[in-house]
Length: 283
Image: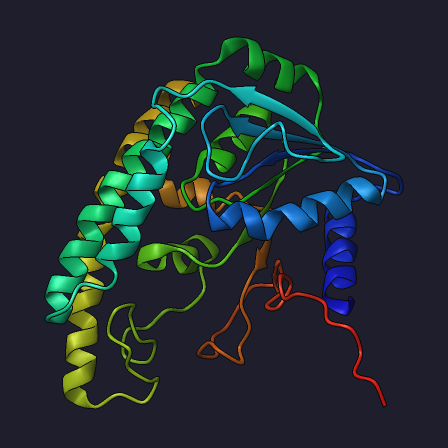
């Protein structure tokens, strides 16, 4: 209860509205949406006018499910079941046996393939001229989005409205770079390595090599999105620059499970926001 109340307070203060505002939600499919949906429903219940933009083909986002918010649908160029198959391949790649290098390569390949599908989603949304015109004319106060594949930040930039991010984290430390938070590889373990924050010299060398690999790992994932952003915004922007435009970051983790690190004032940690609310124990 307290976690959700705090989240709603943060969102309300971020919107700078004394009364209900107009909120455009650009979610991400899969478990990302399952985490965001309860918050979206609460925002609508609190008097905000919420519009959620969803693709016509989706795992969990559908205009037919019961909801108290408005849903706008845009077409997607792939059939039912395609996204589910890609997500399964992506998940399976993270359980590949063998060395760390094998795991990185398998995860990289599956991530690139999955990002192509989500890129098609974003491209379909941004090329839907009627929908984009309606969104611009609706004069939203804020974009509430999961920015993992940057479609939400592009829409927010196109509409010239502030954005609030709702996320678990970013690959390649892009969230560190976008917020200008320190991220020294000598002390902060990289993904896949499972080191602690107290590393030996050999582990630090290994950590640094993975950090250097990250410079090439994420570029192909976001390269097409950067080109699409240039087409829509009529200006060159990098993925990190787009991400840095976020007005407020709601981070879905907690330092109970994460290594401590410096953060910026516009970042709040809401780990446990999606934990199921249990009844109190009886006497």
